[in-house]
Image (tube, rainbow, N blue to C red):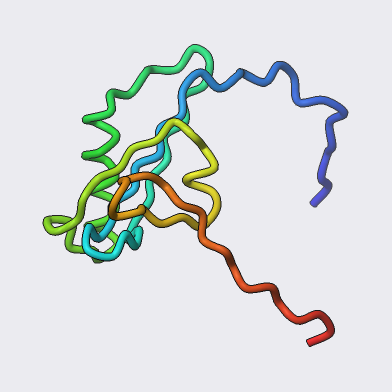
Length: 105
């Protein structure tokens, strides 16, 4: 099979909206499930309510019991890409420090 390569991808639409939905344990702040919604230029906007429902549906499909989980939303795409938890006092996203891997292992 011959693979053809193109020099350009054409016009790439810009991102017009991002929503990150975190379903978390209110007692510990541990995020159990995250769901991100990205809307591109010309795409249909998704309401926060619909994004939360989609997150809960996906979490249930993954085997999570969502009834006891709290919801935190964000417009910051980093909250869906790197490890975070929710501070139980402030209710805000807090980055989690990941241990560094030993080199040469």
